[in-house]
Image (cartoon, rainbow, N blue to C red; front, top):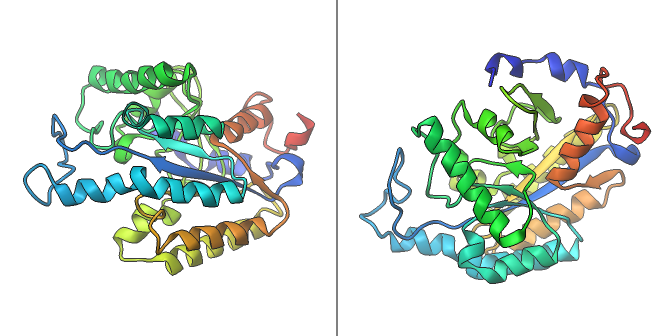
Length: 301
């Protein structure tokens, strides 16, 4: 990957890119469906449970709450708003929780792979080891679904400078380890093509709540982010991401604020509820495949 190519040139070229059907903003909602190992082995560049000697019962059980309780509470809200989700998925979840596999598949969710476990990182791996980790999660996912996922988001954001090259070579269409734009952007990789989709950490509940924010803060940030992007969307493509963790937003004291945030956003016209695969496919078709300057309306492709 050539990091120098992540500069402002493409942003200027895509300035007047328009979303399908006259939409002003694309919203894609990403439940982070994760599994944290009780006794991670090996422990690499970072100890996922640094609070105590392993096992860390408190840390593990707080996260396990998401798969046992929080996700199911979250699904009620997402279903009520008819949200087509893109799961940021640790592939091992489907092995440990077949009921989650069934719930996601029944809803026809999109997926971006998030490694095998959220306690296994890509940092400090050799290129071959990193490639093996990517393909291990890919094979596990394919074993349970019979399909290839469209997107990649590195486990615990533990990407390296090689990661975009490796995931493009593995056949992924889009990538979410960069936070540099409010529009999709192309990434120059050594083989194949790859699209970076906006994944705004500002609204990621794991980032907010670790800073002692609570539900009201999440709702305020969601509204403020939406209002600005929606206003800008009258002139050019804008994408808003909502990354939510069942062990955080699925808590009883917080779930109502997810409901309120979605209710506020979806009360506006011109909001495209998209999946990651739909966003990446639209972007590639409307810009990259036509080689234009971004002026083309996606409805005309």
